Length: 248
Ligand code: IPE
Ligand code: IPE
Ligand code: MG
Image (tube, rainbow, N blue to C red; front, side):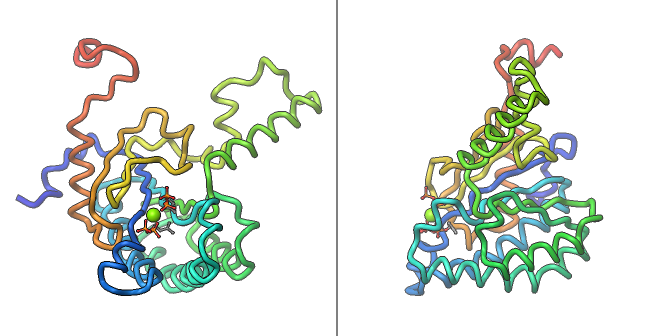
């Protein structure tokens, strides 16, 4: 039986977040430049977005460029920005056809003007699509996002719009860039690294983590389905006992 057929449709995560890692190492293995790995990684993105549509994952957040990635060599950063512009422009018709809505979280203002424009256009074209929401984390880091939200909340306290005692987890969530999405139930990281690298620190509080040695440019639908199946075999207890979960 095909792996996909063994997925329980009743228990598919609504939101999957992925740290797409290992492009550089993949390219090195092929004796190629790091940028070649990033280019190849686009094929994996296309496959996984499609897989989400097929099994009913409603939100897919991809960590595409972190705040810390600005510290990479200029040549790589420039190459990544160019790849971003070209990919968004090439892929938008395909995304639109497949019912994918594109959204972005991150410090958009820090991206080159051409990237901002291309993203704005793609988001406008796909805004009414409902099959899958593809969220690109670009120039994103969780500490940046949380800091921004603290500033906004503090400003509201100072202006008298809210009181200190109005601050609770829900209010904090409303000020995060992800306020339109449910928290991810599953977080996948490729390339054998076991760390979170400043990604969705708040939102992943109760996510299941899935790590694989597969490098991102090799990550295909079957690898994604394996992660979904692993998720489906876990018991999410949220602090309760196993007995409480199985009895309810
Ligand atoms: C992930 O692959 C892509 C980005 C961070 C933009 P890497 O470029 O981090 O690849 P490795 O980890 O060096 O192999
Ligand atoms: C995390 O990958 C960021 C993205 C995938 C965009 P990195 O490769 O930058 O993470 P570290 O530096 O190895 O933790
Ligand atoms: Mg990496």
